[in-house]
Amino acid sequence: MTATCDLSLVEAAGALARGEITAGDLVVSCLDRVTARQSTLNAFIDVRREQALTAAARSNAERRRKRNPSRLSGIPLAHKDMFFRAGEVSTCGSRILTGHRPTVTATVLERLDAAGALDLGTLHMSEFALGPAGQNAHFGHCRNPHDPDRISGGSSSGPGAAVAAGMVFGALGSDTAGSIRLPAAICGVVGLKPTNGRLSLYGAMPLSASLDTVGVLARRVADCAWLFDAIAGPDNRDPGCTAVPHRPCAPSAIPGSLSGLRIGRPVDYYFDGLDDDVAEITGSALDTLSHLGAECVEVNIPEHEPIADAASIIITCEAAALHAEWLATRPEDYGVPVRERIEAGFGHSAPDYLRVLSDRGHRVRRIAEHVFGLCDVVVAPVLDIGVPTIAEVDVAGGPDSLRTISRLNRKTRTINYLGFPALAVPAGRDARGMPVAVQFIGRPYDESLLFRVAAAFEDARAFSGVPVSA
Image 1 (spheres, rainbow, N blue to C red):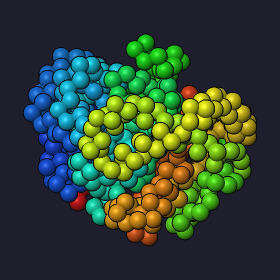
Image 2: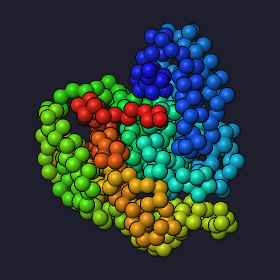
Image 3: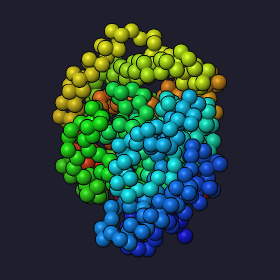
């Protein structure tokens, strides 16, 4: 019998609307799954059990009073521990912010609250969102629900693992160089990095103001679209949040023909050096899109290596500026790899930083016009390797481990520099039974088309983020 927490978000919302279950049923089922799997996966930093049960009772009462409650009303979620909630501890996965209680609440949390969603607690993350594997020197490693000896991906490690394990129906994460798409791909769920500036960053921990994006993880494409719709839109408290009005995406997130659409396959870089299983599954994904009526065309995304280098310069320089005071006064409170990565930002000159930042607008326009003049959506792997073990990315392992870590975000961080939206979607499993994903990359502000293509693909492949409950 399927556990209540193993429903998709859309299925759970439908069952609530029909009166078949209550918000309390959902919360209890999710908390039971947390109890069963937290000691193995380490997906949560803080479980707010009593608060969640109280909120569920309140949600049940409100549903009885309202004729048309919000479609997220009563749905249990949890979020990466970098979204501030006034009065509640947010550690940002660090020792430095132990006991930190912010005085503001993140806009995206306020919008989920307004939509009636419930909050079960804070989720594991790489320290200060720096690390693609999901390791953390202070809170321990987050582990993969499919194989606890393997990584969960980072830095949104807890969201990937918790959603995949059926602990929650969805989660907020952040993506500065791949930190939503990586755990989504590695844990076998759906993860959206929207267009830069599409979602408010107010009340979220900063890492790199130029490249930071908030996004969502869920088990199905439609689930992701529902969450995105609930939090998208302008916010005058975040000057970087664009004023582009939001049009709901969820109605478009339904399976159907892709006839007339052009799907771009990059001719190099994104398909270079793929492990055999990754190459086979990605090629099969392109075949599926063709069978759905799309025309697959080859595209060249130029300057990818310089863009990847530029993204690294921006991230490390901006992180170094943010952390300069703590690095001077509390260096011992950082995990060593995280401190070294931030300190690398001091090795770049101001002219280097300003050059790659000022070149960005020209590059984005040029590449957008070139690539999306030839196709509507680009498809590429998320990773070029299978999911590594935790031992394989242990920095004590020397050069081999460092090379493995460096490969994790090779296919993702260029998209952050360009600011394009990208949606990671499960595409199959490799010979070891681990998830393999593709990412759909689109024009700025065209998340609705990504959802449409991905939903059709998900339906045709019949491979989605089924909770890993054992």
